[in-house]
Length: 328
Image (cartoon, rainbow, N blue to C red; front, side, top):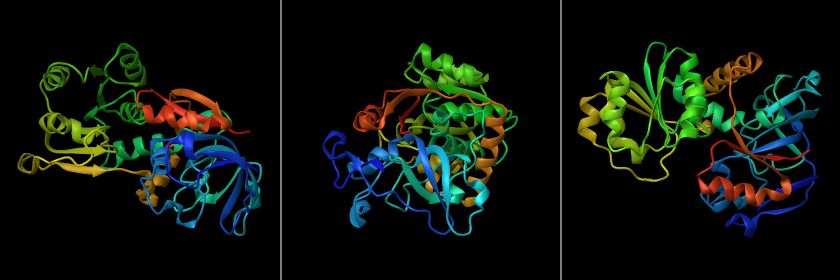
């Protein structure tokens, strides 16, 4: 099969290779998927760059955890009726070496949920890390109906879906964005208010949007950089659910302030989500797709031969929307 892989860590253009690799087989409990699209996420490019030093101990790695395609074969213990089923894939390259940047991937059957007929393979490649992370951030600490939720980076890969999950669940959403295009995307996704996070007084702007009321929850794209603001605008007993802290990788916590407000900080990563949370997300994703209730922002769709460019685009950090590879 045609595939991309790396066998050493480094820059995308230096270490990513494209060529032929052996087609995998579906083991017990697995399905073999002919891949149509592959999602490129920040965690994928960080792995290639060396953020997991032991990743290559077993040999070369075919990157990317998310994707979509059609099941061609099933392993022992998997219903043969699944053959021919359209699926989306998540966690393909977690705890295993071979991901979705190839014509075929063998993965656990539970990691290949059904993709509704009304949903494209391009959208399918966006559903793993971005949509499931957003779902977990919004719903991990209970119902948000009637609450006010601040979502930082509301036009980003995860934030855009978080705005939709929260607003559709009955929350009043305040999103942050720094330009007119992103502001429009937040409003279209369901945000009631959008605040410029680069403004002179972000706290005052958030308070103006809430009518002076503190917010119930925060879904945060930059935990360390935003911490002073989020702590100030959260009510007593509020929650921060965060999935990234790129700018400040080792933030210092204002412990006493957070303690006196009885705040909860939840760190979210799809790989570590409880199985029950994954099942909850998958069920809600299916219903949302069937009802066509989710908006998707795909910034770039590139051929497999351009995998290095796809990594570089994600690493730039300035794109809005998903980066995907078209495989077959």
